[in-house]
Image (tube, rainbow, N blue to C red; front, side, top):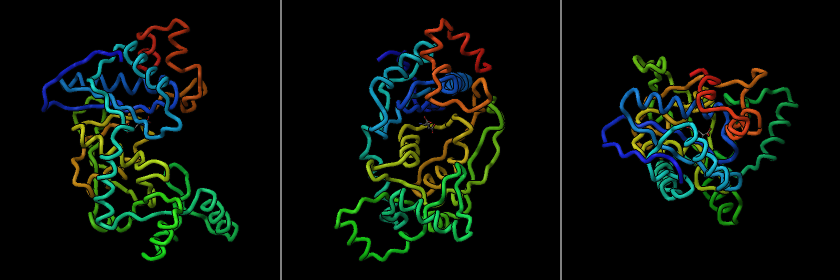
Length: 299
Ligand code: GLU
């Protein structure tokens, strides 16, 4: 593993960069990582690197190694050991168990195809199915209404299911929530933002194939790693509503957030991992320097 090891004393602000090794890092990741490093340095804080590899079908060791190589090339240091989410499924299971005990999660049996069909039926009937902030349809309420014995029967029969959060019940228990969002990367002032997790419907907390989901893993890790400052892309701003709710339900501290601008591609579109031109490996191969990358992302 490459990268500088920095051992900083506890009690300092803790930032993290948390990429998923399911593709090559691009300019947007470079901006996020460099901004995290810069903001951590500004506060004399620490920077952690977390590998978000719960999706073991899409994440590969080669992409993970490329993350270390790219960050080292950019001159970004991080602390060892790096936390790999795939090595901490037990921690996520424990968090889920807390929510199961509170009866705030339920097994959701409908497959994507079934959900699609049900929604198509309903929309054919003239109803507009509600969508989440990413545009995906909210999960239908049918499974939430299943009786205990039917649930047990289907689970015992080995039917595949995901665990979903009953967001209405969860919100009823905790009341209104807000999170603190820095007004700028200067971090001089923060605004209170109202969390509206209902907009996401009953989110998945443990997938059919993995004993966690992005939301549960990120909240668990930020707490277990003592993260005080979450700096990530604007595209995750709305997900913070769900994260704030999970923190409240699980009794975890809430970091302060800063959701930064996204780096567009040459056509003004959002960068994606499949866009080869803006991959850091491609830029490096084309002779660009880390300084060029900083300029390209406006740092
Ligand atoms: N792993 C996520 C991604 O690569 C980022 C998660 C986060 O920063 O909360 O988009």
